[in-house]
Structure formats: C-alpha cells, structure tokens
Image 1 (cartoon, rainbow, N blue to C red):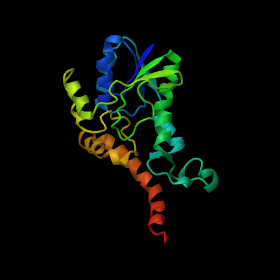
Image 2: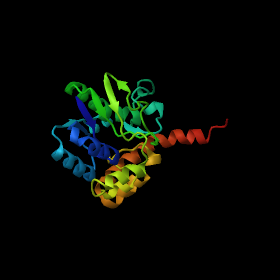
Image 3: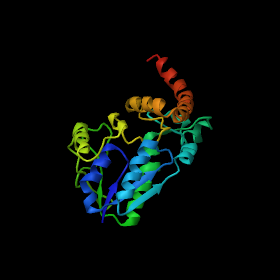
Image 4: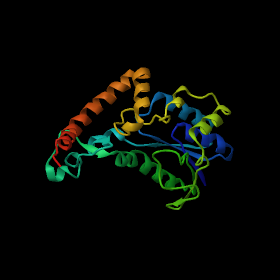
Length: 230
C-alpha cells in the first residue's frame, strides 16, 4: 500500500506530481494553525487524490500543556523542570517535542492504521533539518521512498514550473508554511515571519504574542549566561 506524506510545501507537491498516477493515499496533518496559502494547495491535491486522509492534531492544547516550542529550552521552564523548580508562568518545550507530538506522531499512527507499507516523502539531503532516514530506509515496517532526495531547491522549483503555476510563497525557504504561531526555527523563519506580517497581519499578531511570552522565559537565562564570569 503506497502513501504520500503531504505538507503543502514545494517538496511534497513535487512528490505528488511525480507519483499521482500511482494513486497514493495522501496524508495531511492539520494542526489547526495552517496558513491560508497552504490550505489552498491542500484542497487542490485533495480534489485530485483518489484517497485523502486528513489527520487532525490539537496543537493549541499541546502547547498549553508543554509550552512554547523553542530552539533554546530553559530547563526550569520545561514541564519536567517545573517538577523540581516549581511552576512558572511560561512553559517552554523543545521544537522537536512539539513537531513530534503535533505532526510526526499523528502521521505515523495514521499511516500504521491505514496499513501503508511504502511512504513517499519530500525530504532533500541539502536541507538543514532532516531525519536520518534515507531513500529505501525501513522505519517501523514502512519503506521510505524519497524521490527528490538528491535534488536541490532550484531543481524542485524548476520541476514544479513544468507542472503548475508556482504559488507566490514558494519563493521563501519555509514554503510549507506550517503553524503560523510557531516560535521555533528562528534561524530559518525570517522570511516566513516577514511574509506573514505583510500578508496576514492578524496571524502575525498571534505570533507576536507567543514570541513575547517566550522571550520572557528565555531572556533571564540568557542574561545569566552573559554575566557568567568563567
């Protein structure tokens, strides 16, 4: 049984065009925080797919419990740390835990439930953040098919131009535009945040609120590091 992990970004869309004639079961994780641009692409693929499975997760509640996702986690502000240091007004979690809980784990469970044996993924080797799985890897009994693994971003975009009109936001690095209120991946979110501020000021306001809360938890620890006489 063939499946496709679809995010709405350029890489997963390229995989859709490469494999759509094989009618893969398309899986899309809806965190409830997806940008309108991504929803449009998801709806397009949904209308073309023979079978489309929307996997829902509750990112809002997960963050309320575990804290804001961050590249830096002050231990005393984590759920585990507060068991020792006492409750804090702002909770912080690693972005790995947030993405796993809200995207990867629900997707993995849905794939297993549907009986998928081969999963198409849009991972590229030149990405800064990627899993250790490679084309042909078998993970939990599922063989990963990663057809654009050796492609560059430019090659992906060139291929997409032969298939469709490129969405405007594919010009930015974070083209999947996942959770609009994500406070992590700061080194890779500059263009995403600028896009959101210009195109979706209402969503940007939510992001600003989250970032202000996260900063209130991070800055005291960072100040301690700056003032550490070592």
